[in-house]
Image (cartoon, rainbow over all chains, first blue to last red):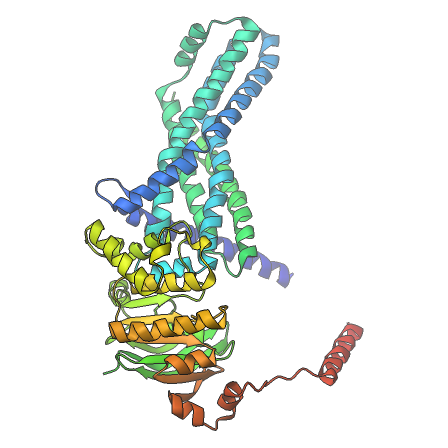
Amino acid sequence: MANVLENVGRRSLNELDYVGSLNIQLWSTLRAMKSALPLVGNRYRWQATVRQMLEIGYDALPMVSVIAICTGFILAMQGASELRRFGALHYVIELVAVGFTRELGPLLTAIAVSGRSGSAFAAEIGTMKVTEELDSLRVMALEPIEFVLAPKYLAALITIPCLTVISNVFGIFAGGLFMFFSTRLAPLLYFRYVMESIALRDVITGLIKSLAFATIIAHVGCLEGFRVRGGPESVGRSTTSAVVKSTFLVIVADAIFTAIFYFTVKP
Amino acid sequence: MPIISIRDLVVEYDGRRVLDGLNLDIEFGETMVLLGGSGSGKSTLLRQIIGLERPNSGKVIVKGVDITRCTPVELKKIRHSIGVAFQSAALFNSLSVKDNVALPLREHTRLAPSIIDLMVWIKLAVVGLADSSNLLPQELSGGMKKRGAVARALALDPEILVLDEPSAGLDPIVAAELDELILLLKEAFHMTVIVVTHEMPSAFRIADRIAMLHQGKFISVGSKDKIRATQDPHVRHFLDRVPERMASATSVAAHFEKYLHSQETQ
């Protein structure tokens, strides 16, 4: 019994330590973010941010688009199979449009980016740690948070909401294709129904979620990299851990945000 | 006044004492070689000298500032006067050799790009890498990587140059070339050089003084002649390459019996 309590206590302390480290890292990065901004910041840091934006955003575009199209089709077909029985097939449009802008667009994008970029952040920083590159930054009087993390975080904050919007567009487009082939609904009419279904608050709440997801993905990925101890095998473990933890935290954060918006944002 | 003073330095990892009350003065312009076997604590001492870790107690005073207690701003200022080349070279793999050397200049000076290019070329020429400036670190040999790391350490013209195992993993000819490079740098730039190594020929070629570490303590500190003449058994074992832990058939048999006994009792 004492052992069980000891284990529970130790694990709780470890989790608290992890959350505390994430918070400290987040505040340190926010303080260092100015250096990564264009015009007012350091030119080389902004160049690094642009490189990261291409890696997180541009390179992920095909994957995010295909996932959104497939999910749009799936959602439309599954919705239609049930709604058809009640003669309410036109509600498929609302289901796809609102479902994507509020929920599926941000969530699917976050899961795709966490698998691609969260793991890449952990691997890159973990390797830098193992090969003493982080130490060499410190002895050159350069802060790894500013040099490595700030460009990644800024890039994630810019690109993940953009990818979310693109994911929304492709998901809704897939719903339109389904409606065209199943009911011969004209594309322009579908577009008009979509615009009537979506309110500005749906788009804004979706984008707020995507900013929170970007924060989770960038910081969990980088923290896992910074916490690498030992040799190359621990880099592998950190990449797996980055994907698992960031996906888990993204879903938890999604539930919390959805609850907050449900109870506070009135239609 | 010494440029680096270490006073009563104690470092422990998980209750295990790695450095045990070290005291050492390193004078301006001298080449101090920290010598010792694997696990003697020399790399830990180096990390203390460059401010990468904080000790459990004691002081590391660099240019009059105790870097174990100073503010981050003071530590940054001190670090501008220390150039470090790590054992693994630690060149940034995403940057060319030229950009690796240019990095501290771009970050800490407001020099025009053309001046930075010129300074980078000079540093690379000094270490013999001027023709390889556009290569990436993964395209370099082990010796070239180490020389690239030295060039980067020299970028800001530091007063103190710290080299961690510069000859480790290199063939004797390349290691000898690095020794000559260290001597050349000292003569050309009048720097204080601290070298961590366990390579005896290299230590005796480049050192003004040698500090010998054993189990976290200095067992001998002095000139090359003093170290050669010392009768301390640990130093003598190290100099004469006498193994301290001998593997023998009887000791292996004893370990095996002990293992079997522990298995039986389980």
